[in-house]
Length: 72
Image (tube, rainbow, N blue to C red; front, side, top):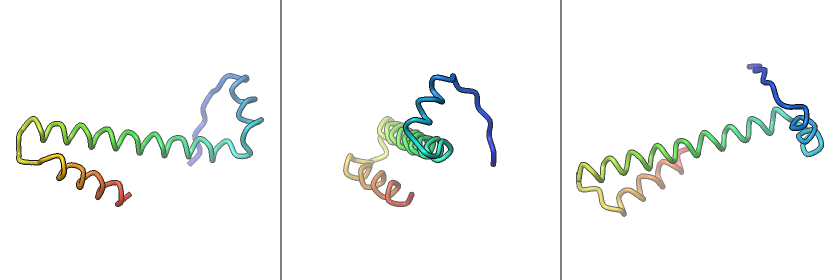
């Protein structure tokens, strides 16, 4: 899918000097950002579980996060 964005000329010039594929860079950055958001959401969910005292200890939480990270 094509998406159009507006960027300052200075930033576009910088991108052109540093990368061969603007779209590839932006896609990579967005993938990294999405993964970071998902990790933060998982951490928040674990904190909510802690607050509810459902018996999840730190080891169980880490195992869940590790399994989740390995899946995707």
